[in-house]
Image 1 (spheres, rainbow, N blue to C red):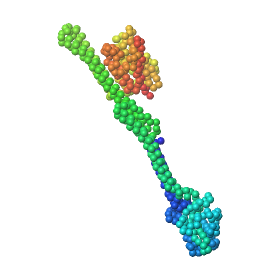
Image 2: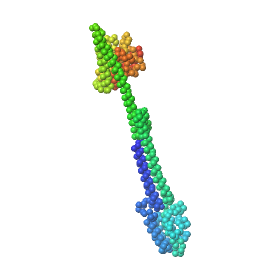
Image 3: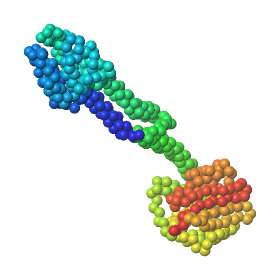
Image 4: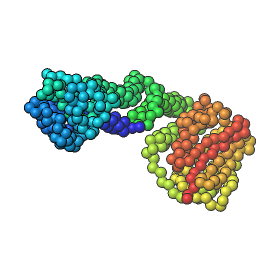
Amino acid sequence: MSIRLRLLISHTTMLIVTLVIFIVSALLIPVAITGDVRSIKDLYTRQYALKPLTKQEETAYLDVKYLAKKQSDQLLNEAMLKGFDQKLSSVHSGLIIRKGDKIVHSSKNLESIQDAKKLPPFEPENIKVRDTISIGHQFFLYVKFDFYFHDQEKGSVIILREVSPFVELSRSLFPLIFGLLFFTLILINGLLSFFVSKSIIKPLFSLKKATEQMGEGNLNVRIENNRQDEIAQLSHAFDKMRIKLKESIELQLQYEENRKELISNISHDLKTPITAIKGYIEGIQDGVADSQGKMEKYLSTIKRKATDMDQLIDDLFLFSKLDLKKLPFSFEDIDIIRFIDNFVEEIRFDIEEKDINICVENRTENEVLVIADRDKLRRVLTNIIDNSIKHLNKAEKQIEIYIKGEANFVEIEVRDNGSGIAQESLPYIFERFYRVDTSRNKSTGGSGLGLAIAKQIINEHDGDIWVKSQLGSGTSIFFTLKKEN
């Protein structure tokens, strides 16, 4: 349940409970004062605060009271009393005339009252003239006037109206009921506030604690929240941010390590040819190259070292642009079979001069179109083949290229029968400056950027590149290209 819905339900419940308590209290007040549940419907039209009688009852009471004082014998006149009965019946009241210990007149709706002793006792002072009384299982609200007949016998006129038993109970327990209702309101409000606050504050406190730990550098703290509300969404978003921040810091640290390694590798690869060039130049200056043949050999070596340095710088520049994604690609539809055939024909002369046999084994259709950048794809093949050439050590040197078409891509394999690569080195051969030859011998190890550049280019083509190798048997490097739809 969302916090918004939870707060809405909480506030609505509080409003409903408050209104109910207010209405119940408002109804109990007139009932407690008047002693008549039916008087609720006339709450705003009747004046019960001082006179808990209806207009008809008040009129009848004043008339019979006057007769009791001035003409008490008239209260024994049944014809006159029937007129009072008719007036009182409209408000569900009745009149009882008591003389001595006997009931001499009783309205029709009060005929169930037969015992005069159950009526309010005679009280000539007329102090307690309004009250309620219980007769059997019935409750009555009454007003009475006690007097003496002309023969000095005790007499009473009593106007009664039946009321609910709840009237007396509510009247006596009204302070307690009102207090309980008020306490219930406070209790419900407190409980709702507590549970709603707990459901909000507890996860926020956990989030605050996690934030403090992150501020102290602990990015491994996890924020667990299995709820389904806005705070859970905030916790999940915060945890994603933590993971991203952790990955970013780890990547930054990795970049820093790579930068240090890059500087170290560049320094090593540049220092070696520079040292050699300086040595040959000093030999020329010192007159060691004292013949034309030696001079040409020294100058040729210097040129070769400078060329190696230039190639290393070009590779570094290319790799840097690929790494920063600042090298533009020009993708087009290419017939990969014809492209590889043409590429092999271009390099065949140079390859065969090194006593290496190269061939293309087409294991797919006659024409397969892929989406690729011609120049970048040529660089990939060149780097892979150059890497194979450096490790060919058998009498019959062989490089084979296989093309295999799949549903949505083409798989290209460059296989050689060279020395192979140890299994522990396979995961690292596409990393920059990695050389299987740990001595970093330029004649066999290269710059260490060739396969790293190939991987970057294939990744930009949304392809994959991987290697399979076995020591002494040779190496196969695979890469894929997407087919043109």
